[in-house]
Amino acid sequence: MIQHVLSGGTTHYNRMIGTVVITTVLYLVHVAARKLYTFRGGFYVLTFFPSLLLLTALTGVNPEFDSNPFYSVWLWLAPLLLVVYVAISMYARYSGKDMSYSVPHYTLLGELWRNLLLMAAMFICVCLCGNSDRLFHYRLRVESLLNSGNYAEAIKVGAKSDDTDASLTMLRIYALSRQRQLGERLFEYPVVGGSSALLPNSDSVRCLFYPESRIFKALSIRRKGRMSPMEYLLYIENNGLAMKPVTDYLLCGFLLDKNLDGFVNAIRYKYNLSSPSLPKHYREALTLYTHLRANPVLVYHNEVLDADYADFQELERKYTDKRKRESYVRDTYGGTYWFYYFYHDE
Image (cartoon, rainbow, N blue to C red):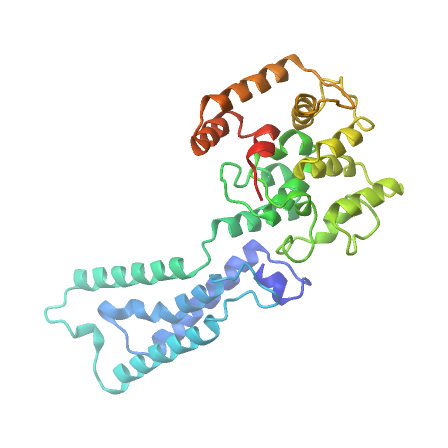
């Protein structure tokens, strides 16, 4: 992501080359520190400090970046720590004091343990200061898999976690669409943002380094402009500019906004409602619509789903406490559109 941002999207990161280059550079920094400063014996590991400081700054990435992917604190903290390190090193060098033998009866085993403890402490600092935001790493992983065309693995990332945001929702929608599973599995994941999360908007919904043009290219030859996702999808649909995936994008957009009437008016012209291959969430939404509307424009019945929805309602009536009710319903119906419709609040 850093390379993509700093290069303006003109280059991409190669894992093998990146691994070799970063490790080589960090080791050369260590070699330079070892030659310049007097850290031996039990303090020899301090010659790795500049390398680990550089690694910490490199991994301390700001997920909400604009043009600079690094946290601004590193612009002054890293140089300050480096100055302190150099000052201590130069003092030890020119004062004639050898820090490695400041402890009496210093044994080889003692030197080894002191070095190991100092190295462990420095690496713990690297881990604490580097970006460990789980959601941010989900997004990076998904985009990396999308870049390689591995959509099946992309939809597995963070599948068992409740952590999500509008950008991750958008990436999952795209990956599911490429796998032709959007209407079948969307609400098995936590989703936020409503229909606004269908497409990137370069602000609250965006990619970190995956080209957003690829997402739009899969839908139409027309650019989105300033239209909302639903306005854009309806425009290209009504003007004959839509690719095949647009149908499921539109239907799921209605479902994300809990617009059952819009969904029903659209799906009856797009799918054979009696087909056994009708996606699961569409069947759930049609069942819900039939039960909620006094005068539905269409009536949909499915013996299995009608029974499941009756069990869903029975489970709701069983618990009066709102939190307990939601918890029990989630355990059984958390992957259904019904749960999203009744329990999801933006």
